[in-house]
Image 1 (tube, rainbow, N blue to C red):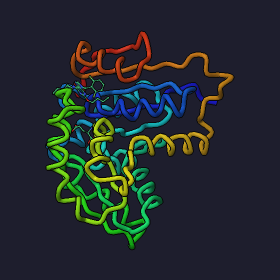
Image 2 (tube, rainbow, N blue to C red):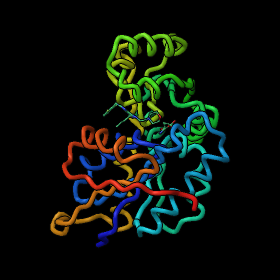
Image 3 (cartoon, rainbow, N blue to C red):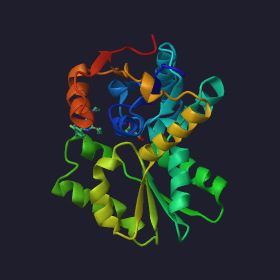
Length: 269
Ligand code: I24
Ligand code: DGL
């Protein structure tokens, strides 16, 4: 039985949607989270840069002796998962495989949609993953660069959000999809608006939530899960490259855990 934490990395605060699922599904596990808020967003950045930043976050968490690494950011998973997995001795998991698998399980008509940042959609990693598992599946991808700024400007529940989401998703409306992957950490905040726009016949897949189910399986497979009898010292530590004042209210409002520990860190020194 290991008491080490599970490491999570993300471009900023969006990965907290994945952490919320982890706290819900794996309440015995300690979590260390790095959010690169100083350099967020990753969505429009070139792959080489994202690789470098993601590697820096990974090295920081390795110095904290994590037992497993979750790349909670879709853009970072698309750019860096293969590379990081090759270099680490601990299990590494991204959000693209679990989201893809769940979409294959869900679809009845083999018409799957994927929405995400520019970086995620340009990489084609969701499409490649889905097709590598099921050649019957047809994949339609769409970048939604306006969605992250919408959520981050606190507009995720507004009339503006409804308009932007409806306009952006118009090309997907007549694609005959029965399943749509939310391939970005921020999109669960827009879940009900996206559902309204796409209609009830489309099943939305939250890649982050699916990922935690796989984390659970992997922990058990490697005998790394914390047992309830030993879970007295569950720790949640957050590290941000940006300001604690920006991180704290979002994290405590979103996760609803009190006295959360947040530290400012510098990467790549
Ligand atoms: N949601 C996110 N990021 C923010 C935010 C938010 N401010 C309000 N809400 N700010 O991500 C990040 C700061 N940005 C500013 C532009 O430059 C880069 C850094 C989504 C968080 C998902 C957990 C809205 C909000 C909130 C609390 C919880 C959820 C939420 F304040 F969406
Ligand atoms: N975390 C990113 C993702 O899931 C969204 C925010 C960003 O562009 O950095 O793709």
